[in-house]
Image 1 (spheres, rainbow, N blue to C red):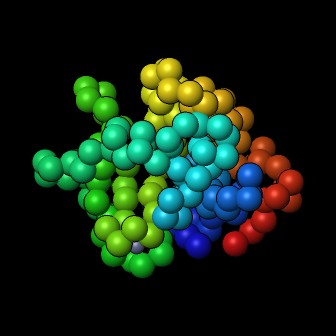
Image 2: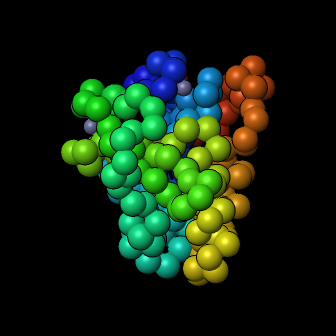
Length: 151
Ligand SMILES: [Zn+2]
Ligand SMILES: [Zn+2]
């Protein structure tokens, strides 16, 4: 599968029996369907699906940037705002195929939930930091590392 942001082929990263698609060029991450909630739940986060839904508000305003195409169905994705003020803008497939995080956005969302004191989310935030380093140059990526494979 190709990255919806930069079109580079993404690698599959498997953790806790959940497969994520990760772009080593722009550091974005794609979660199919409800995988993000499943991942957080597997890390002990309480009520992950509901809490994620709570902080993700469909952005009613005009899109801030050109809509990305869903890597699964190819249709334009909706932009979803997380938080107010310095908000994070995620891209979500209207058909529920999944959700796209640009590099660093997943960290921001996990950190926000972790800071909220919601049980288990601090662990989820630490997990995200561990699995997705913020500034990993492509050449430093683990070649054929554990559970990583070319798509
Ligand atoms: Zn990319
Ligand atoms: Zn789609």
